[in-house]
Image (cartoon, rainbow, N blue to C red; front, side):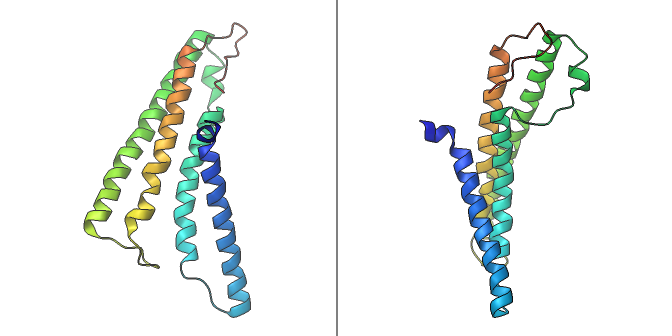
Length: 163
């Protein structure tokens, strides 16, 4: 079960490793062989999309998203809790919308038979990175929202952060 709790980190690390190897290999190929791999930039770009969405999920899970605290610092712990719940709810709905429209985008890409520019692979393969990443972000924001709803405001002004 620990594997499922770390799935985003595992996929993100794999993406980063593949991106690094591809980019490094492409640079070496350019300087040594005066030729580059035509597919490396394309794959790296698509993996960056997945990595960004997974990073969102990881930050949500860790409670590490940036926030504008000028308002929440000036209100009572109860109001702060409500504002946090509203923020996490909006983030969950936003990620759910990306997931939903991402599925539509992938279905469209499949139906139209779109292929990538460089490798001529089916576009939907890489397009699926959007709903996959958004799925993880939706789940993690939903978890943080539930933890926030269940938590009790701290009397000192500091609220228990979801971990």
